[in-house]
Image (cartoon, rainbow, N blue to C red; front, side, top):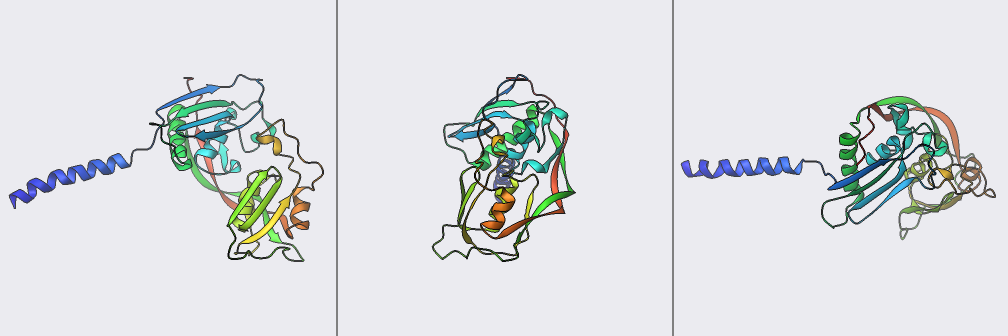
Amino acid sequence: MGMRRTITRPLLLIAVTLSLFAQQPLRFEAASVKMRQPGSRITAVGGEHAGPRLNFEAMTLAGLAAWAWDIKGWQIAGGPPWAGSSEDAAALDPSAKRFDIKAKAEGEAARSNAEFRQMLIALLLERFHLTFHRESRDTAVYALVADKGGPKFRESGPDATGVLRMPRSGYITASGGTMSQLVGWLSNRNGVDRPVVDQTGLAGRYDYTLEWSNPLAGAEQPDAKPDATAPAIFTAVREQPGLRLEPRRAPMEVMVIDRAELPDEN
């Protein structure tokens, strides 16, 4: 019995140590945060990652938080005026502070979106001293419903790839795409000014295309010009796939920024 106790205690200690180690959040090995000078020219807003490196250009705190927590811009509320808002991406609000971030994960291995999100969350909490809470708010939305004549597309065959692509702004092609995917794309400021919820009752997978003129195309590429020959999103949704966007109100969860500070540049 004494031998068993001597062996068990170190094993328990090792197990607890490994468990605590596994719970440590991922952090960047190195990260540079630079604030843009007011009035500086903005040619692109957004980010990209390759291998162990993540770069963001001209992003607001609200935009960074939306990417880090994998939520839509309209789900960010509160915060100081310089943090930006869900409206900032399209309007390029001059009162919002913008940041360029260059960060690298430990080692040279490529990291996943989920890993980069965890590391960015750690950076926002540490550098911006960000605190927040979540709450449900009554929100103006568009309900995606079937038009009077019904959908103009059919369910996909068994060989459908199950993806929805947007090869360019204002154009979607679906091969086995779901309605959940479609409202996700539309809620990401693709031609509408409020979130979209699925109330079509269509639970299958479908093949269709949707082309429209996106007046908000400049949110990610301010110099881009929308296609003036294509119909507005509300007309396109009705005429092409046979759906309709109806203005309504619904409870939606939002992330409310309680506190944030401008970071020290390094």
